[in-house]
Amino acid sequence: MTSLADLPSGGASRVIYFGTPDIAVAPLRALVDAGCNVELVVTRPDVRRGRGNQTSACPVKVAALELGLKVSHSLSDAVALVDTSNDLLGVVVAYGELISMDVLSVVPMINVHFSLLPRWRGAAPVERAILAGDETTGVCIMRVVESLDQGEVFGRIEMPISSTDTLTSLRQKLLDASLPLLVSAVKHELGDGVAQSGEPVYAKKISNSDLQIDWSNTAIQIDRLIRVGGAYTHIGGKRLKIVKARIVAESMTTT
Image 1 (spheres, helix red, strand yellow):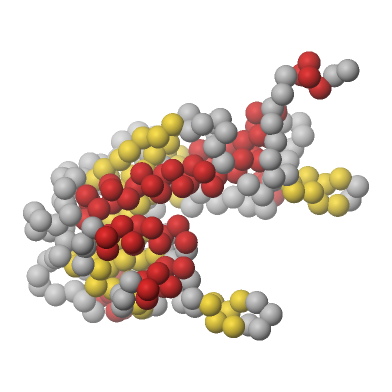
Image 2: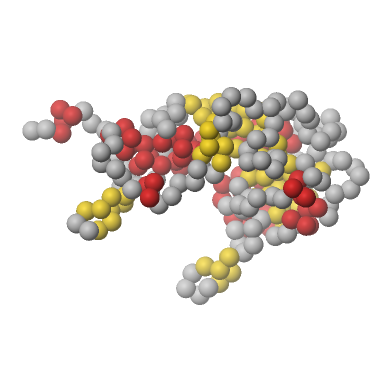
């Protein structure tokens, strides 16, 4: 077992937050509300959108500026904050880019991952849990290491998956559950990390072809795909998106 880079028992005095999309906004706000000193927020660069090709900031950048926090698009700015005080911790939530080893070697980092590791390492853990028909999932706070989602786990919460959970509803439940756990990790209240055990399963990113309904599958399998979101089929040569469905007894479909 290892600790978070020998941080002081009181936890990290300074936090660097790495995040980009909307799902990473609530954890940032939770850290600020808990009194954590978020010294820098690193996001992916602004992008150009719309007909006017105007520059648009990501949700985390917008929230960080509202909170009066310093924002950067460069990992080198995070490295520049390193000193000998050993009180710096990186928090990664859906940053959107691999963090290189030269950064990880000087800034200890933890990550919020939406699965019970080592099951569903990778890019789409919530989607894959629904598609596989898992009855439970959860949240892990883990150390960020060079190998994908293989770091020690500092805390975890299990959560049941309902037969009606969609990707949106389940992801929101997991996000809500992760906030107090993340704050406890940053304040070093979770103790030492524990190595992952068990057979790893990888959550490959969902492709467009994955979302096409195969009508030879069972009703349960098709329902799971629809609950992930974006499921579609073709009727009369036109693409039809299926937003919601309900499984009914076979006797109800016959006359």
